[in-house]
Amino acid sequence: MVGSLTTLVVCLSASLAFKNLKTKAGRTHYLSSPSSTLEKFLVNVLIYVVGMTVAYFICAQLADLTRIAALWWFKSDSFIVPGPINFLNSVSETVRAFDELESVNHITNFMSIAMWIGLIANAGLFLLGSVVWPRLSALKTFAALYAVEFALFLIAMPIALGFGDMEAFSRWFYDFVMHGSFSMSMVVWSCLQAIVFFGLAWFLFKRKDVVSLKWWK
Image 1 (tube, rainbow, N blue to C red):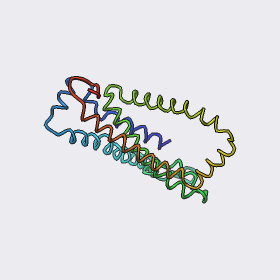
Image 2: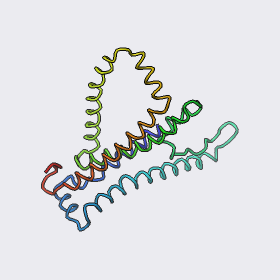
Image 3: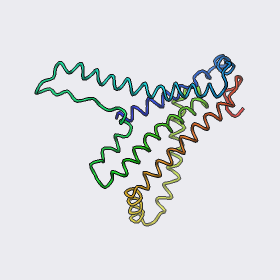
Image 4: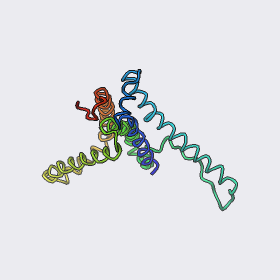
């Protein structure tokens, strides 16, 4: 739950990075400022992606410590105050739930890394959405994301149904997951996504102009 909230906060924050591009007056003031295009881009990434992520974890941790301080006065044998939550582990806590299984400890380590890199990739995706669609950026990016996922699902279903021996496929997929190949693939895939999304966001931002919101002009 906390991990999902972290992802939501990071994505919504990244979608606000280029809100100055919504109107012609905003684009005129923003794009004509004396700072370079690279400086504008990096400042927005620093504030809305890096800064907001750090601020979120700090605020969440302080809120949890405030909870402990407020409830400590009511502590008794019948009322136990839970200790502080480590919010830095909030993104990877889902896969960490399987750590009691010795056979998959090596897998959860890679999956935890993949989830953290995936969080960065999601921020890059919504940063890209903020460049392409400054107005209602988060909603439009969500819609585009689920449209792509639905299209991939429609493509994958006939392939899966036409695989033939589903039992053999299930055994192959089980081995693929349990031997760590799946978790390693997720790390590589997340890294590629992060590079593509941030790189494409920078590429399209350089081509923004005052007259039109259309990135292809």
